[in-house]
Image (cartoon, rainbow, N blue to C red; front, side, top):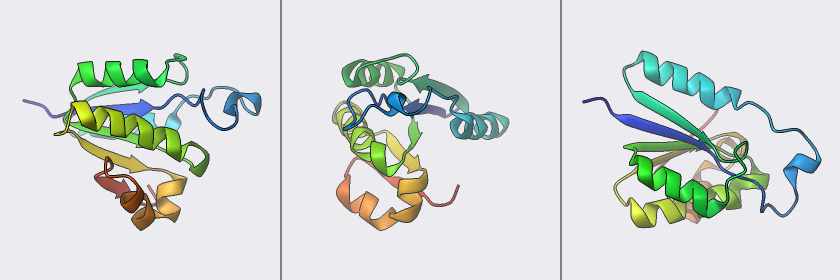
Length: 128
């Protein structure tokens, strides 16, 4: 049976600033590229773009838990790290066996600190 990877773009609606006030909602090219490589390697992959779908944190958690992925991945910037940590912490409470993998600028700059500050994150990917 294929391993299932769920890639999530967390909603940034509750950020300390409204990111959409500065830029438009963009296509998650990085996660789509990762999804393409994973599919080519035989994984089943889905993406939840909670930001584009304007999902609340609770709605994003519900969809993620309902999907029951083997692996859960995301990318994050420093400005959205708190939101990413909150999302994964809530998911891990309900799916303790899921492996959470995070990449992006924040993680690449502060890999050890990221792992120290979030028990929900299992693996960080630097410089992806």
